[in-house]
Length: 341
Image: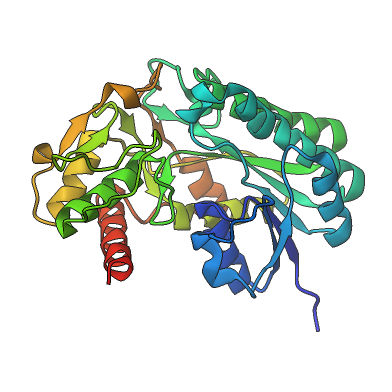
């Protein structure tokens, strides 16, 4: 009997980590996922995976915890999905963002180099590395790096290290430059999930809505959903599909970085309209822009050109913004109905 491949997923409780676990289990992998040490056992994204994957406590700020896992499991593939992943929070937590999102990947690369040099490594990069680039409508693998927030700068540092480790140590390390990707497993720190949960709360008349990233109720006393800059534009895809691209990158004969997106773009207003339309409501009656939720700087509008991924990986998006928002709204309505029985 052939021994199954071992995949180590750093950050398994994230939306990407949980979907990637689902995907790899179907492929016959043994999956080891890292969680941060905590007294809380509430991990909704991976509840269905408990007993199917191995969970280990580790942290990107603790080199020894990463080393121990690499030594213990000798993984065939390592997926580093862990980070302080909220760009807006990087302004209020710049030191933590740098430590986890920039230096964290360095710890992973060093651990693999020293203890398991033949492993294939995937590093989660972000379109935020292109943050302030002007005059480019379709970003590809050659688009210059011009990050304009602490999160994007931390991701850019890690992204540039990928090539350093490829060239300096002949390691199989690649980066996925992923544009915004969402799902029902997104946290409420992200605007698409705030929209879908807000729609569900308003539609169902929920009196005690969850709180947003600044600790205030998602829906105020007047029934309004508070969001930031409604004119901000993003390229939104489906996380469940994007994890397939991660895996495909590690199956190639040589490591290479790829842009993963939908090559479309929509404003937050567009996302609101799609979500509220789905339940027969007018978004303009229920949404307001709140200055407390604005970023100090906004990234430029840009679409993710996935043509290289399509050509070399055979990957392309199948779900686009409108359908994605409908999936998320339906999921949150179902979740709230279950919780409020």
